[in-house]
Length: 294
Ligand SMILES: NC(=O)c1ccc[n+]([C@@H]2O[C@H](COP(=O)([O-])OP(=O)(O)OC[C@H]3O[C@@H](n4cnc5c(N)ncnc54)[C@H](OP(=O)(O)O)[C@@H]3O)[C@@H](O)[C@H]2O)c1
Image (cartoon, rainbow, N blue to C red; front, side, top):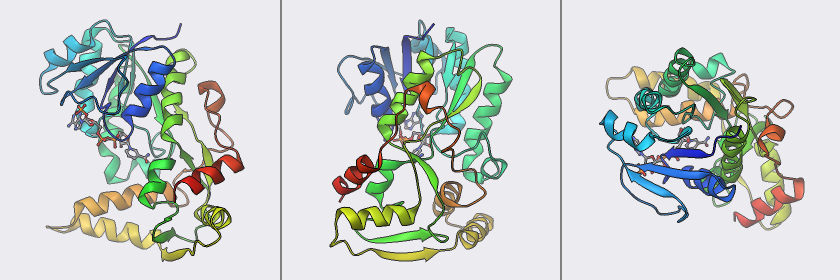
């Protein structure tokens, strides 16, 4: 039977509102756990509980009575404590803050230093699966969020073309990630203790540039070639320096997981879209999305 009572942590960031809004639209009973108590971007039909994440009692008490717990917090290494709190409160399903690259199915992604906290969380969930079930959602880069930042295609400046730009990768709209979360909660048995894959589109950077030129003929694409092999070498070099730029190295590891060949970043032929109720975009809908993003 579907889980109905759902707690969400990290609900006020880049991704959280899309998850909460979809859950509310589909009739789930949503309780948001928040460290700040902020509610911007969230619908009014939710309960907000202010929690102190440094206190297990505070988290356990906020989770009592909940059937499922979705984490969208950015501090992945803090999640084992949330899993323990969920177990103590009697929660049945934990969806950790994954929502990105293919850590589940690709050893090279799993080995990238930026994903240490996510890997640790996945291992912890596997070790505790007799006490709480889990589902790991892999969606690739957030499509709409990334276009706004100039990743994939930069509509306001120079596009960094990773390797030759022909690699096709899976990307997902924030709203479709919300649908995927609801889809997991609607299908507890089919999604129990495994990874699920969703995508809105499979797209290369060169295809995205072509669409941008089609929908806005006056758009003059500026591009710069980036060799991801070099980027990877430099990111590791940065990590080994005493005062290296760790932030930029971590960002580059994320780019590698999304765009580099061999990093398992395409699940066009085999994904869980149908089970989870994610339809994806037709060619003309993708053109509309890019046209609206200028
Ligand atoms: N695939 C992609 O393209 C992509 C892009 C970005 C992020 N992601 C992934 O998506 C997930 C969510 O990321 P996001 O960018 O939405 O997160 P975010 O905006 O950085 O933060 C989400 C919320 O988490 C809460 N929070 C902040 N610090 C916290 C802490 N130390 N402990 C507990 N809660 C904290 C805050 O909410 P309150 O104030 O309400 O507590 C914050 O609004 C992450 O797993 C991230 O890796 C993927």
